[in-house]
Image (cartoon, rainbow, N blue to C red; front, side, top):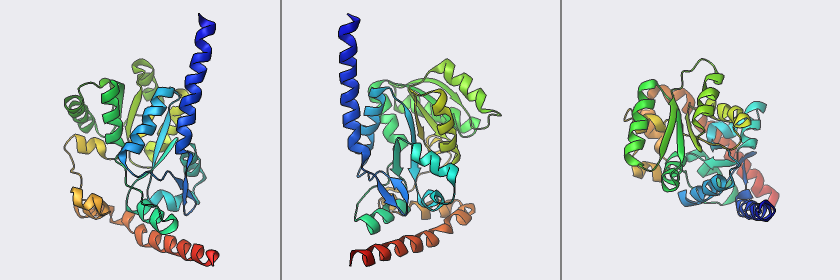
Length: 266
């Protein structure tokens, strides 16, 4: 019986890998790789295939900060390169894709896509990050909105040692982990945990836990659709001004790259 089963498993695994090859198209945003996702459905389909393959991995949200840091930070570059999904996140990635590749990609709400998928599949979820209060409230919100998800554990983002998290994950053995530690810290952590938990899918969720907890509000749909979420967050959190200063530098860098491409095509 075992001899009959192994070839079948091999065939299924090969089919899944073949389907996942569809996501191998990657565009370069000033050197930084990014999957040119058009909508949430494409991201969800890919995550679904990853979960079906039981091969795990972690995602990275590609924004202006990461694009500019990609060339300068070997550690961050390694983390981005190792991600199974490099998801566009924010005005910078969308603008760069349009100017450099004539690609109309979308800012993907990956945490929401992952939660919808987890609910549809009845997956085991571990919630990691944010303050204790936000983490606990986010878990309660998830339970209410996504009743088929089995929340098998949680941990706030103020642990003393990563080994504490590893112990919790070994006990919970989730299918999916939402990591809300702020970027790029959450991606760095996910890359470390990936080595010890190769079958788990880690999805970075930034400030999504605070939103789920009701501590912060997401920008209005109009502003999100028109790439103005960064402005909404800046008005709400003036302390973000230092981070947003890179946007003009980023636009100049992308425009310079665009002019170079135009010259090369002549």
